Amino acid sequence: MDMKHPDHFELNYTRMMLGALYLKPQPRSVLVIGLGGGTLPRALVRLLPDVSIDSVEIDPAVVRVAEKYFDFSPSERSRVAEQDGRVFVKRAIRERRRYDLIMLDAFDHEYIPEHLLTQEFLREVKSLLAPDGVLAANTFSSSRLYSHESVTYASVFGTFYNLKRENRVIFATNGTLPDLPTIATNSRIHEAKLRTFGIETETLLPLFSTRADWNAKARVLTDQYSPANLLNLE
Image (cartoon, rainbow, N blue to C red; front, side, top):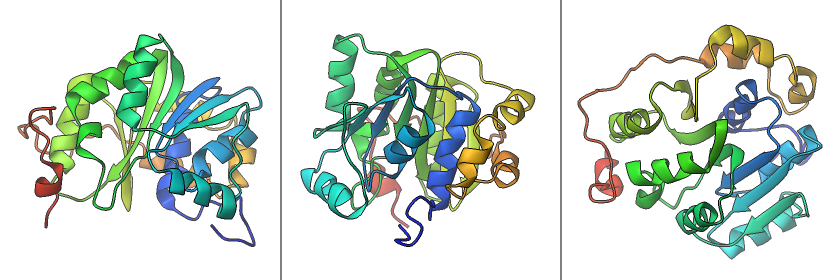
């Protein structure tokens, strides 16, 4: 965070993640797995007056840091659950919850936790999406896991948008993926507000691609096969 300009997004991946609004401009219910500094939920509350957000963070210390140093304030509209993201998802399924937008941004000291990378987990997440709901996932753009992750997402969601600038952000839907003309039209809805966060349409739109730039024969990650830490070693 730039303390002189606290609303400005300093990291490219956070700018790309809000590109999810180009697919779903007016989500009313949002799930964020991985709080970090609270950048994404804080911005969504400002952008969307009717939004309701559930954020999930496994480490209570991270929540305290977000509140103390990053101007994150839980509220009735922006709640925080201190628990494992997959546990939250399983309980939400039992409670028959549905979200218009789900954002995956959970990392440990090495990478995304293995149990949040698998086909089974993504199927669980998809079951929480409302019809035509959108998934936004922050991953790495260059690692030995890239092809494995890609085929795993494709096995659950089919074709998805792949945005890369330092990190890689995946946009997938529980329904028909909007085409590029629709995304371009939607990009204008929040354009002025997004600029206050440093998100420029002319920079973000060209990143949208459905080109499969991975090895389609890579093995899908499952609960029985998800050696993420080993695969991600250089």
